[in-house]
Length: 319
Image (cartoon, rainbow, N blue to C red; front, side, top):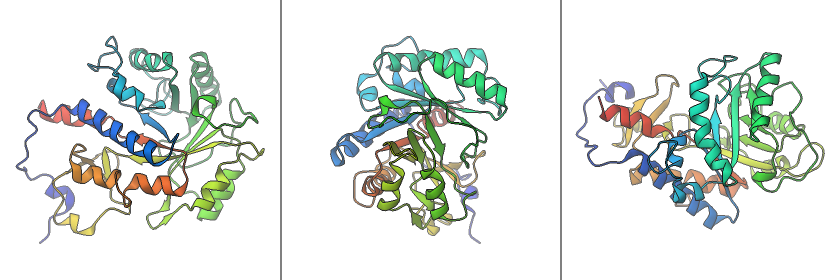
């Protein structure tokens, strides 16, 4: 009888974590992704979500910036900075906000764009959140669900008719990476073209076998008011997702050595040993890689998620 993938991961593997600096390995991975992308397409935008400890040399807020890493980024994003860190509409604990802001402010001080995705749907919470984001000179999005599966009905904050050809010019963004509420790819594209968001952060794939086309992306690069905007693709580099094109059915019986435990909070998402070359080849560096598909589709950049996977391995090896 074949073991399930989750069962396979309970078997102790002959794998050593000695002498691995998990933060540095993630920094190196992001730096390599950025270098490859910018070689393929001049001006390609790289935004890192969460994992703010990577911004400084020691991972502490008082330390100097890690210049090689931060120079690889055009923007730094943070979820739940003011609202929704623990639950939707719930204010993020003050000590958490203060801690995160110390890192974000360092990046902001050297002209990196800071994007904040907070989670709330109550009108008063939305207004308060927008004030907090605006007062810090960040740009923000208020998501009604952690699933990031809809376009909010409320008016866009800081809506404008400017051409947005650089991330630093943006005043707002939409974060939509789950298309379950859209009955077809054409409906998705139609709904997005009716918006005036400065930046769209979306997924390359409508479903596992149907990516957005270059023509789709061209349409999305214009707001409803006719001005230009940026279209950025989501890209998870710290977890493998079993609904992606690269997933192989044989992994159910024989998981690759770089595949680790399933994320208990997100079914079908598996931690990866992101420093291993076989995983990295899936992400970037060749014509079959995920990043090359994003570039070839015509996206302006990549929004890189699960940067904070280093936390999982640091905790695992300290048990």
